[in-house]
Picture 1 (cartoon, one colour):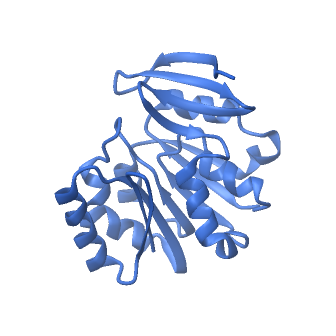
Picture 2: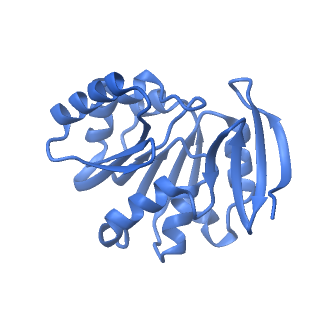
Picture 3: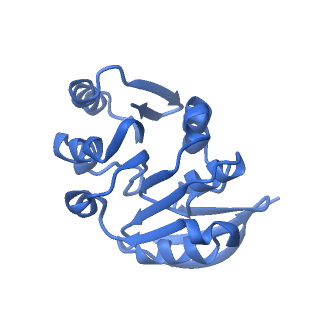
Length: 202
């Protein structure tokens, strides 16, 4: 069974975006990169499995790099009843995410069209859980793993809150630098590996 093309357009970075329907779930892709895969999006599933007990009682979730809302879909599929702030730089992606959001969860979603770095610089809200899933193609922008941005994220967490960052570690030297930054800011962090994806969890 092949994916069905629902929509195609050009995103803010000039890349062609395809919104697909595959086995009754939405996929967001560009070229050979899959950004969202409904409630089967592997990074979100891995995070949920690791933090399931905590996420079951989570109330306020921030998703930086919303895509089609896969983290939200994974949590909803597992009975979570949180409120979600979805921050997405690309207005087209955010529009599609809201267009296809389940009606039951619409009143629990705050969509924000903004650059994640700019959003965090002015954010005053405290969250139970922050999921960072920001990519340009296969690359994570430098600001996402900068001490400044990560400290802003840490300051936005409630006491005892959790943070997860999805990273593609195909450059060993750069990955070592990322881990050094994380170790300094988040002692005791955990790394879960899925192929080249490394998911850092605090």
